[in-house]
Length: 161
Image (cartoon, rainbow, N blue to C red; front, side, top):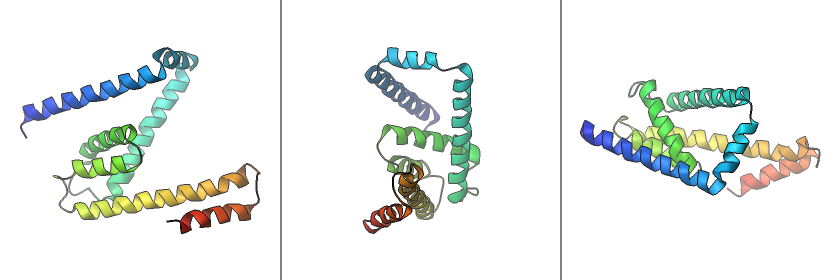
């Protein structure tokens, strides 16, 4: 793909992204969004932006290390792949969209996509397992049930897979 063609494709992607953002603001009501932002302090917005930035860098570094991409792509280049995958992941349902988007973008960079896919799937499975375990502990944390009920909830959700 030529450099000029790639540049045009990026412009279309940016336009689609802005259209999605505009549609989301329209559906939520731009007045309500602006009113909610006006209620936030500048320090809260700056803190949220810093947390999102740090979280993104840590998530990208985690994914980069798990997939063992050091020999095939620089972290700086992978960060752009991660950001685009994250954007796709929040516009489509489920955690699968960012995974597929990451693999699709790495198609020309990594020689063994099966290895990368396998490692990223295991990472997703571990994350899902930990989320289910924490979810099973919620009733105990709020004092609604005894610990045995949470263990049964976790065991039941594990047996359904």
